[in-house]
Image (cartoon, rainbow, N blue to C red; front, side):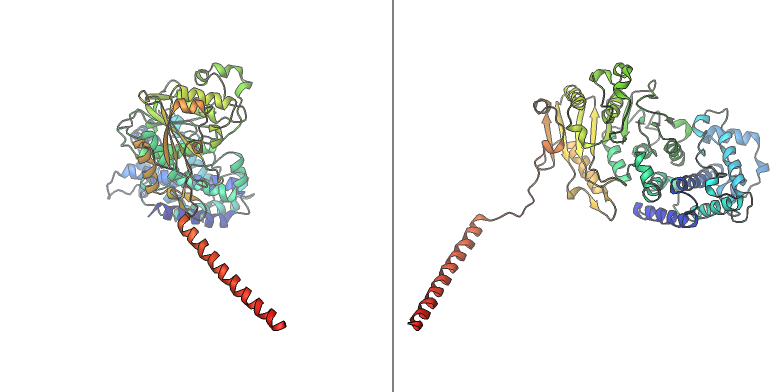
Length: 519
């Protein structure tokens, strides 16, 4: 099944489920039940597969809970990070969902049991609160137990019908795509106000390939605005587990998406000891300072959000911001995320960051930060992408590639990948196909000038241009207007004039004849 087919099936199923429960459950709340159920199903299947270990003679779902010894449970939690009894598996709960009068409380007990199974173990912080947003006893599901159970059963049955085969082989970020679709269709205004624009898989792939380019081994991967974990997972796909030495790190301010990212790690077989996703404000309360630096940083931070900035006088002395000598504007935190990422980057790695285009040409503090980045030779490439790649916004974003190892190169590469040759137009959004991504990576790798598309510009020239880093300032726009052959045009004009003269002569003859007749 292709990524497009998987995405269509997911969206159609969500729509079907919505028809069963919408009108009773607000769209913003509805998403929690869909995502929670998706996670419950796949964490159940993942755990059952682990217990069975590929032995076709074992069907964990058919076993009695009584056969589980403390030793079995202890070993499983140490390995997987959590434990699920056979009776608690999704497949066993869903088959009786329509007739179970205690469905809502049974689900709550199961989720509490899964989370508490990690208590006292190394995985506790990665398991705790995973189901916090999936409140099966909430009055948002209905005022009576019967109503709650009926709607929960509809969601469970709907998710049961999804067919994705082996989850880790999926071509889409199931949770990220589901959340994006839910926000787009049922809670668009709430999602936009929260800045919740998820990174499409094609953009995630491009960012990850840029950040990991020519790296055969990496210590660890970091996303300071992790969202659903999509960027981390795309980077994971490029490396075998043993080559990513210390795993995957991220921080997310939104509690729902924080849980989403942790779910995604588990369900893409990133074990609890190989990831660390933290909850909190990256700019004000950064985590992992003791763990830095990172070889690979991938990020799509929220565009131009407000932050405390200069209202907190201590921030100018922060190790992340102090070298630039100025803080990002309070109304536009974009460069705060950029400087944060730069400070967490190793001397051999790269950071690839989605940026709002305005930060590359606006004046004031942003210009001073650009001067710092250019003068210290930290910018490798700036890429202009096509418009309308993201759900909920048509903004044509840029990708900023940072590195600290440009010792023999004092140029910045500009790539204009916004033209029609770099995307495929679909009904709702433009997409980057693999061929488009490969072309961009090839241009990025070779660092050769390509007319109308790519140009490397010396830092001194950029300084003379007031540190303007807008791609359009350095790449000539191709003239797509029809070309005119001057010789052919002149010949056509000559023929028209000659014909005009012939007609005038004929008209003069006719007029003369008429005058003679009147005389």
